[in-house]
View 1 (tube, helix red, strand yellow):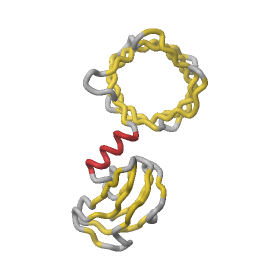
View 2: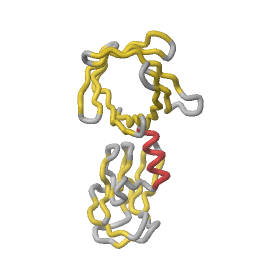
View 3: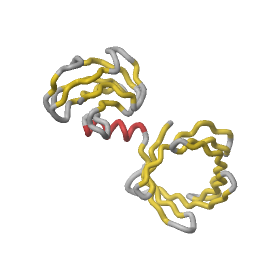
View 4: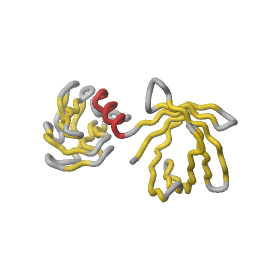
Amino acid sequence: MKLDITINEEVRRVEMLSKNGNNLLMKVNDKIYNVDLRQTSTFVYSLLLEQDSFNIELAPSEKSHKKYFINHGIDNMVATITDCQTRYAQSRNSGGIADDSNIIQTPMPGKIVKILVNEGDKLKEGDTIIIVEAMKMQSEYKATGDKIVKKIMVKEGDAIEGNQQLVILE
């Protein structure tokens, strides 16, 4: 599972590659780490990261189960976790447009139900482009402005991965 963890406004893409007891093989952005993580008491963890040792207090926020307060003796930080469900909800709320606003993608695996456009079509803001089913819910992805369909990367019925490019606009 891939998570985006934001600490002090810096986003890190984190993925657990394998787990054997307390030993974790983690990928953070594009770097691989061997981590030994042990809970020593409530909200307190011992972390061995390569040659370094840390004692970390990790307390969940009372307002959000995806926000944590971190204290490692030197600094206090807040970490916010964005998982696939959060990305899916954000995508539904924003119309499924990636950050550059010309790439339509869905953050969760799913299935292409219907493609309502062809390459070269001129779109007006609010036109429905594609319908995707994920988690037994169908989502319509709409144009956020006047656009032209540059490339359709999928076909109806295709199974798709999270964050896969579906349609490119210009």
